[in-house]
Image (cartoon, rainbow, N blue to C red; front, side, top):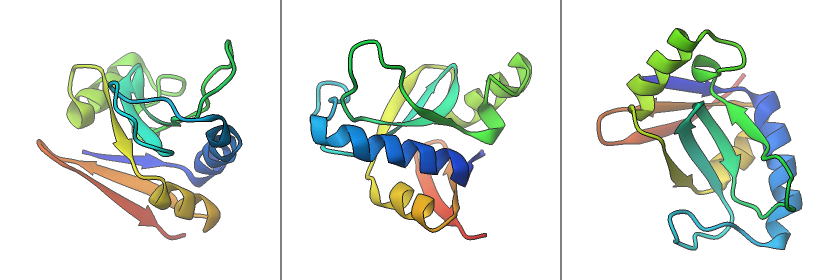
Length: 125
């Protein structure tokens, strides 16, 4: 299953990340990872950064086009979520370089999910 993240959303996400990372980074599953992004599967599938944010600040996220509960019916996004990320909620760490480079170069990001791996591809316009 392939998921696509639009450049405009990545630009907004990276801008917020670079503002928040100097304040520290949140651990993922009690593991300190340093600055980066998380691919999250729960109510849809989205990217978010792990920078600390002030109490009550809403996280900036970039939804996958194919798995966005704000733009798709429940059945559409839920089917895509299960096909890509599985039925359980979860998150995985992504090193920041690919997302930052895609955002700065005007590219989208595609993530291809298989049973045991995820491949990230920067898609040039």
